[in-house]
Picture 1 (cartoon, helix red, strand yellow):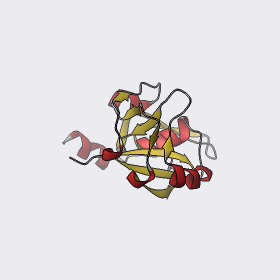
Picture 2 (cartoon, one colour):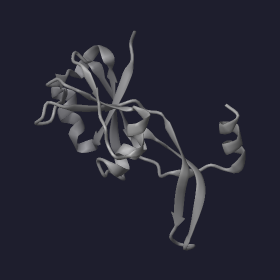
Picture 3 (cartoon, helix red, strand yellow):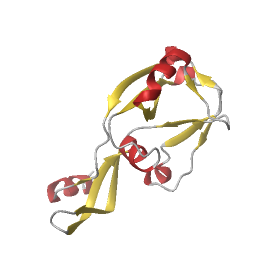
Picture 4 (tube, helix red, strand yellow):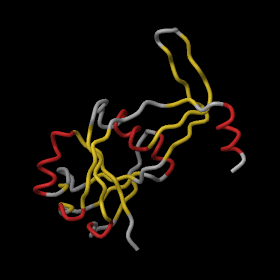
Length: 143
């Protein structure tokens, strides 16, 4: 069954990836993730202009978290969509300190390259964490 994984990178890497494929780092690792929405029940959003903090349930996507906290890309980047048929190695769970780790959303493909024919892309601008309003929180609890 076909499944898709994702990889985010800086936009200046795109042409090389489209020509040569998504290459592993020096350790033979290609970092992948499953994109979904992450809810943080202990979220905090700080409004620096008003000098106040709001505490509550926040949401963000795995892609946003990786952009902000792992590759430190705050502007437009590229999100690659990888067809699982292009992954010919085992997938090892990537255990990191950030939130997506405990959700089992980040993976490492142990192969030299994922060929361009298995890749598609879109430009992506990471979004900051968003505070849920009370009605949205109640809907989540009733699921």
